[in-house]
Length: 335
Image (spheres, rainbow, N blue to C red):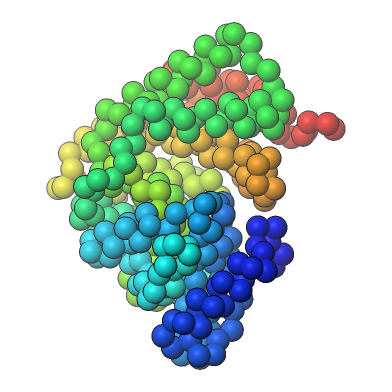
């Protein structure tokens, strides 16, 4: 796998570190996956089963949050990979291999209820039992910074749309409404990337959980909407509503989710997340040269358009996306 960020020197560092790790007298190393960051993952086979090496280049990535959240989630009884060795100065972590069966690749009409039930059970366990002390708050500043990615990277940079004053006002007013919705919810541990590309189908303790290093203390509906209104796979509204009800039933004893208010929290939280994600997908192309996520933007934004008639505070944004953003995505700039 060609990687523009990988240097020969870095590969030599990896081999030197692995040779000094227990049980690594001889091994093979193969790329396992990349994600939307500078982190890379390698599958290491030393003969007695495989392990995963995370390479988080210092200066680009800090692997301490991953180790910290890994400890918190393991203590909460959540299925995260066991850590076998780590060096935070070099940016290496050697951990269990959950295999390569992503939820995204294995979900079908037939198994979705079963797999999402497992994921909802794991989510409620994570929310109930994870130590939240010292986590960053998902506050107004962070929520707003995320939504600004939509305007900066998707609308202005990628689509070259110049906003007029009315559109600026519309976006600012919508951002305020979405922030207010997020901040009025009960707060809990938030994984922040709890979706089908970060959940692994595992033989026991399904799902195996990954990519939790950006965890925060924030709105209770955030991870559920990441899971059920996924940027990479889409389910019919009635199935999503059934899964939301299942979640509310399971979390209720621990948190007062007020089931009549929860769908609104969930839908508007989704709008915040989908604005953020579509901006990140554009940034991954323009800043990092990763084009693969661009095709996920129309699906991501369609969730917002679908809410137009249900929530007056989203009608203007939905119209803007429908009239200006989606058509521009269909005919990229320069065509």
